[in-house]
Image (cartoon, one colour):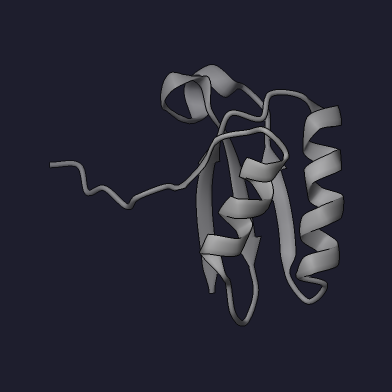
Length: 81
């Protein structure tokens, strides 16, 4: 299972701090930020946070990122016509 989140995390240093907390909370999950080319990867220059694991607790992921002072929302699937 994979869940993708949109965040306003902008730097590697910011991401590393959040990753430490997320990885300790979800040690069996694969978690990473995509901070490359923020202008073209998502709207409004947001970064992408990916969480892959057997079970993903989106509310907890969002809460951890929010407590660190950043915005975090599930990136909704959209079908372009």
